[in-house]
Amino acid sequence: MGEPVTPIAQARGVTKRFGTTVALDDVSLSIVPGETHALVGRNGAGKSTLVSLLTGLTGADSGTVLFNGEAAPAISDRDGWRQRVACVYQHSTIIKTLSVAENLFLNRQSERGPISWPGLRRRAAELLESYEVDVNPEQLAGDLTVEQRQMVEVARALSHGARFVVMDEPTAQLDAGGIARLFRKVRALQERGVTFCYISHHLEEIYQLCQRVTVLRDARHIITAPVDELDTDALVAAMTGPEAAASHLLGETSSRTRKSGPPALAVRELTLAGSYESVSFSVAPGEIVGVAGSASSGAVALAETLAGMRSPTSGVVEAAGQRVRAGSVPDALKAGIGFVPQDRRATGFVPELSMAENATMTVPRRLGRAGFLSPRRKAALANEAVRTLDIKTPSITTPLYGLSGGNQQKVVMARALASEPCALVLIGPTAGVDIRAKETLLAAIDAAAAAGAGALIVSDELDDLRGCDRVLVMFAGRLTAEQSKGWQDADLVAGMEGTRDDR
Ligand SMILES: Nc1ncnc2c1ncn2[C@@H]1O[C@H](COP(=O)(O)OP(=O)(O)OP(=O)(O)O)[C@@H](O)[C@H]1O
Image (tube, rainbow, N blue to C red):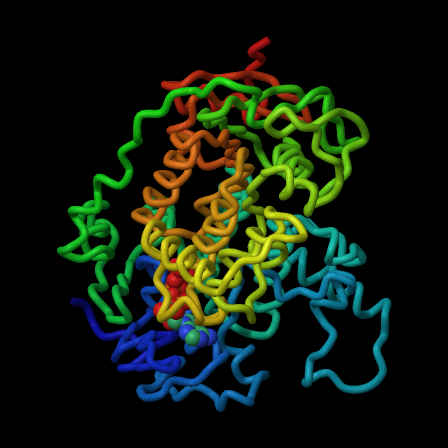
């Protein structure tokens, strides 16, 4: 079709192994100038590994990477890579303790001579303005929102001369408003000739933003096609393969009934100054309660308080009728609160420890000082997690850094469940997992509730909230509404955005 165009970025027959794991098996991908090209696949399919090859983080065992038809620079030639490609990851590559201007202009091998600070700030301001990034160059990078930080990273990449940007799940930590602004930015840059490779587990984003899509499955290239020639069913079929149809039943909810006894979780007049105020609610044993709120709603800070990560200004938290000492993670754990944090990299796990250690590290603490988890029991728990949560790992002894992002998320969930908690507090529990895995995780929450736990799911993803018995809506630090099961999407979204006054 049409005359051949030289791809701006290309992988030709690349293969990459990690020990016995084949992460990419003879994969080819061509990204043409000016397109936004989606890269999709189930957790562990090989997407991040392909991105590592395309961005020079690692080399292929065989096969080649080319830019504009020419061989990629040597892995050690960092400047060479920076001039060709940039990657905006979910986790930041920005140095938080430096200003935005310093992040944009320091550490360039091409720069010589003493630094002129006024000059640095002026150039940073010009650069940000030219890409319409509304950020003060003197601001500390650590104070940027995720959205601002991503745009600073894109501006930095473009200032190095790169016209090809990889975005690896960029919407994972953005709320609806942030996603809309990001998309506007990507489209505007695309009109200025920038090419994107876009990775996401949210398939609707693929259709909104991308022109072509490539599907990887089990380390192999399955298909590349224009998005309008591949509807969602066909896309999911390409991602999951022929044998996956049977797994559909996993999403079925078990029959749950509320159990008697004290609330699994009770929160009274809880306030964290600057985040949320006078929040009161309870979750019964066997009940699943959602909390919907945008990034500024205070919902995440509320969940972090329940897990002991933050000290509230005032108020009381009880788990199974017992008061929980505020501001202590070990005490929350001991009280029976299982927790999935927002940022699994920062607070969720220890990458160097094995999958089994990570999945069970909460268990001895729950048992108290005398508690001792035998290696056999640990292995049994880890194997059970692999089975019930369908975790893809070569072995339970594999260090967690050897698992794909979505599978790491499942391990964090396994850890929350392993201590047989009376209450689960889960922030964005399905972040980064593929659409089938999402069903598995939600089914696991459902099973824990059926066994008597109370669960609180804080999420701005409607699919996470759909199975909840009721959803509390949080806006600007207050609980503003409660929606019972069967709510309409529009009602919840309006509540999250504060455009509806339900009281
Ligand atoms: N550093 C590593 N050491 C060992 N194995 C690894 C390493 N990085 C990736 N793998 C393995 O390579 C395979 C592909 O992983 P990759 O991270 O590329 O998947 P992915 O498609 O990005 O998944 P996700 O959607 O979960 O992020 C997985 O089986 C993973 O376990």
